[in-house]
Image (spheres, rainbow, N blue to C red):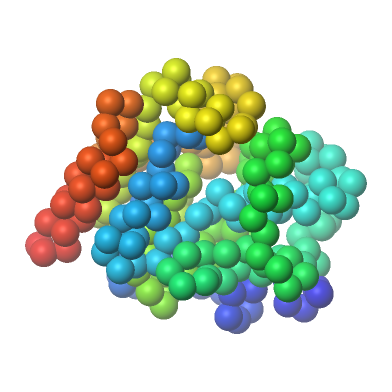
Length: 233
């Protein structure tokens, strides 16, 4: 499936500039188990935008790499897989999806082996360059709420809608455990923050939202109100 690998609707390159960023792109960044995915999905529903789970895109590449028996730490071997990797990115309703051989990947993306290796895959510049291109392509057609670790710093650096969602390490570890995921929050933070390519960090102009003592509804209401205020300007 080399000819159709990593496609949305076309194979054309997407040029991103501040001028062309219309409709709006909402950037929600944060560390693992901060609640950003749930918050982003609910905000997209609240505003009628499309939710893009960028983490699922990196997890899909990780899962496929492992399926092919390639070591995620072997950068050259991973890069060799990219031109013909049979994954496509689309959407169902208002949510982004990753499709492999005609089926939407779901539980495969949260397997322990995927969790343990996604940081290694996400640190590879060629992987990030390819996926960032696909992430930006969504926004050429519609308003999006996109969550990840570098949305406000790399994918949409010029958007005025930037939020960094976080929580204490203890709260995030408890959330992770409730999902049945046992990877180390501290280790995941270290890997994501120290990688050379697009590390996890708060954009200087992003609003910090600490969800440690907030309910999901409170977080969604707070961010949605700020977005609506900025849209009205």
